[in-house]
Image (cartoon, rainbow, N blue to C red; front, side, top):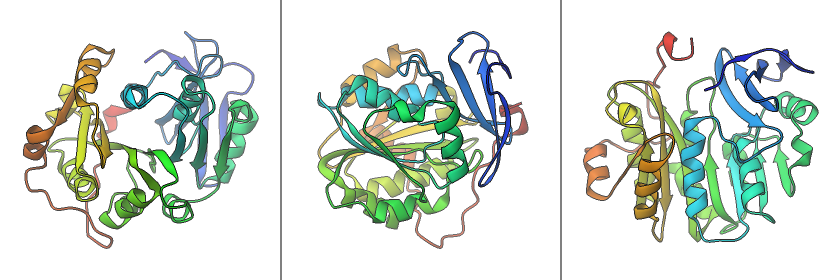
Length: 282
């Protein structure tokens, strides 16, 4: 990741609905900006080049998007921040219709005012939490649903349960694809349970992550891709291994061994969410 410090026309700290965020400019890319909350980077956008993806986990998500059938997509994004992936989809899949659900109205306004959100074609932002927004979507209305919602460095538990995954499956078309950003650390106990939950709703599941994260050696992101009709696992395996992140694609029997009998998550389950060590974002 490039060096960053506040500069430019609108850097600094801004109050939003749920606290405060900081805009940081990228010294090495004049049009690159980071949105950070509580010291945790939340989004990176290059305002002049939406296909430039700085965060490694977003690069892995883009691999999946690139391997979907050609043409525009009807996409839903649960979790918005600076809308990095919606900008990418709009650029590489012209004509795509996209909905972003982001509960922080102040954050959405900040991104509109400072990070050119209005320039993204055919993008609608709904000021709603993920479960409420998903409940309002029609059956079989999306080709792609991206779940990338975080409170600080933690995934909201209510978006990781079997009950919510059933709602996601309802919204996706039969050949639709789900992408989920999971953060976890040593032991990967939370990631295993999330993968078990996703597998309860989707028969085809793959996971992308860097080897160090997969081994539980460091806190990081794991990307789950899921579908009811199949995933391009051969292409994902090749592209992940040959990409900038040098990631692995885990699927089939290897994924079954990774899950290793972990129980699915359900509404109301007591769960200890993973917390990154202080040094991760220091």
